[in-house]
Image: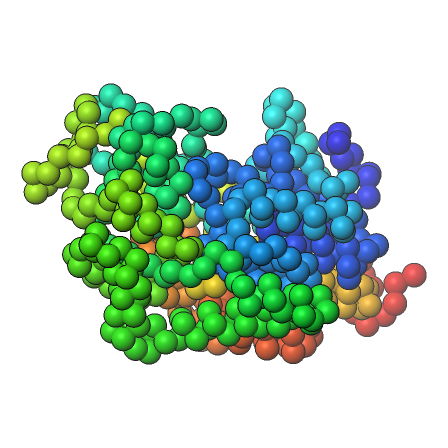
Length: 501
């Protein structure tokens, strides 16, 4: 696609990001606003977003696919914990069924987006892989760029790492076709990434050690939901999907609320399952976290695969602090030494807002941290912009479904009123009580990055909530004309309420 000329008709929406969020938005446009003109840009050369970026061994969902899949596109595989390849294939099917592919443009890095209040348009500038610059104008901008920094993961400042003579790999940049056969591997970290990598490498590597500073809470569940499979055989597809999704939602809500209400009892149950899986390999100190369950995201271990690798002698867990990385391994502060040919730094990710796109209003930069969330997706006093930030304690896609339904309802209503611009208006002298939704979990990457995200309050609509059921009730019932949103036409000489010719 060549750069748009100033006289070319602007898009109705520009979507940035060809992952779960962007594809969900495009599908809803196809379903509810089929006449809308849109494009989707992505810096990568294929769809999938996070699921295309990360290539480390064993990458898989850490949410049940009955809640991680879109509500409008049933998950029909037997596996309820899916691999990255399965998720990408699923997204490809959604793209095909809603004819999205013709509207996707890959290899384009969006650099900036400036709102022109005179024309009521976003002017978005992107750079192609060959350095060519491109400008696109659009009435509405949707950022489905996720919240990770795709360029720079968190640097844990591991002492002496530069001295290591073996291979150092960060999971975010896993080398293609890397052969770790027969190698001594130390994975630094104990989060969802490490828990996926350990069983995938175990058995091929000589031995895999997961080196953790502090233990993690683990949840064990089957990789396949046999009851869900039977329900699909017994009931019509639409009913089966609704029932399986409702079951998964209810179970997750119950477990999360139970963990918060009775942490000691819940923690004892989790440890009991791990102890049973490990047998003689159980060590209390390695599996007793210094925080309560669900104060950080629970690490899912489907079929107990990591614990099977440990019990079989192919992997082990070591708890301790790094003293120094040496040429051939790691020395811990307590004096223990871990031999290594490969060090995997699964030490966490960094947050990034707006996909690191320079967003501005009439040339004035937008600092997300100085704005408030509106209805889980828009920013206070920023027109025609939506940003997708998923749930921390549930499947990301649950928010995608709610937000994209609400946005298409908003757009349909704006068409009926013949309005071009919508702004969540918040007065400077407001008396809102602030909340910090990222404090729901104490995970390091959230606490390091919470100063980058918009503000949130204790009540709707000026918040981003982490309660899916409450959000669903709000987003489906709240009127579009709620006294907060301000609408206008680009033709400002025509009073509101009159019909444009």
